[in-house]
Image 1 (spheres, rainbow, N blue to C red):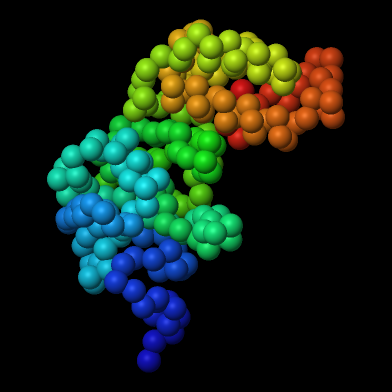
Image 2 (image 1 turned 180 degrees about the vertical axis):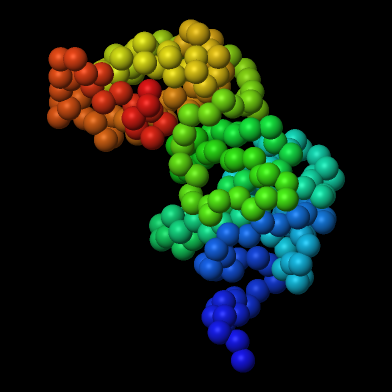
Length: 238
């Protein structure tokens, strides 16, 4: 007889599901990656002890792997990553939960990238390095946090109209421009806003959206001696 309830809630499926991770995170070591075009879930990742239930990564998590490990999936074999259940993942407007990656081996440090949340909306997503032979701390949904990030996938410089729009938005929202510049310098070594690339521009633009939604200018007057609640990646660091 066993006292472990986890075996009673294992979903019947031919793949790893978010509900498999209700009891906690899972660190997997990849043994094979199959890519079959034309399918809803084209990427199937087998791992040690998967019992015939591979991890079929969604498009967002595939973008994370490509950004962190590169596009050659044959190089993923032997590498590890930690998966967890994110309850906030939606399907058809309802929170149903989904599998997300919190830690990855073979990366030098925290990696932050802009991922699509809804059409036309992106948010920063951070993955942490997985220490070999050491279990990571219990995973939570990655919170946008400032971190020295490697060059994003889209390094094309922003255009003059994009720079003009960014400067105008900063003024309209009421954020201290110097705070924005300091944030860019700290995280990307970018000293001037017109030197941002497209991915960095998307991150800053989304952060301005979030700040504007949470801090309407008419309702949040700046007090003498304050920075007016300057935005950061968690709405408090820019």
